[in-house]
Image (tube, rainbow, N blue to C red; front, side, top):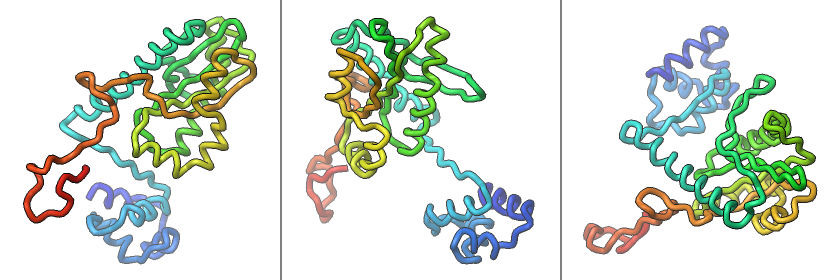
Length: 250
């Protein structure tokens, strides 16, 4: 009902008819009417989003689970990947200096760099973006480009004068995320042409710059020491009789 009221209010503010919005969104006028009355249960997300976009209303989806527990679960996975990445650098590439959670506010742009890494010998800077989930590939690329562009200025505040700035997106592996990466392979390859093997080799001799993406866990674990990537299986005893897929997967 709140969504419907918002759509109606903005439409009237812009002096548009429901038919005008329908034509812009390429849906029927009754669809716009149903959105405004809050009757969206039988509509596809695509149609609702199209109606909102037609009047420049941003539609956000906010998942909730057990109060604040969802944030805790997601943050625990990110924190685990963060810790595992830092541990790997300490063991394998100790010549790099890592600074976690670097906040910035430059030229009206604000954000947080997961890990800002500095190699004093070559004056190389590396922006490391850690992802426990992939939500929006285009936003990932755009955000990373902005952080990489601002990184030399951020580094100068720490006394680091970078000769080159690189970026590495580290994604916690899972079947779903591998599929997501494969679905957007062309876009990701264009923006991040180097893989994990290439960036690891570069870390040992950082000449020039790199833009890489790889699925890495570095041995990260989630809550209670379990792997962050979980596959849920149903035991045969838990499947009700008459349902197909005896020991199926969820």
